[in-house]
Image 1 (cartoon, rainbow, N blue to C red):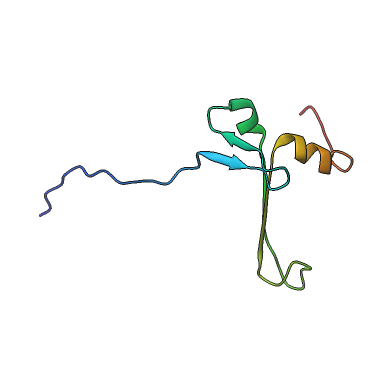
Image 2 (cartoon, rainbow, N blue to C red):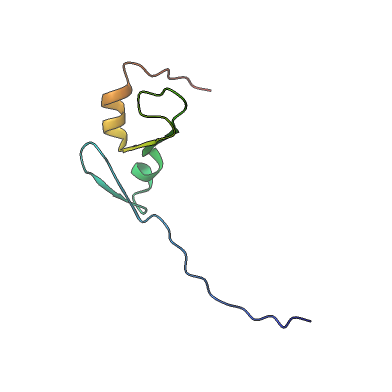
Length: 78
């Protein structure tokens, strides 16, 4: 038999996002900027220029993401 009791568990949560290009700090309460923050995560495969099995990540504010990617991005209105 088990006797149960409620316990509180500490959790880690992102509170600020930081742009890797310009250093802009975006807090969770800055809803528009928070939602538009760009995060890229890639697990590299065999013969990758980044290195076999490495993980590559980048975080960009929407202004920097636009500046770097807009000329290559495909934008649609789903």
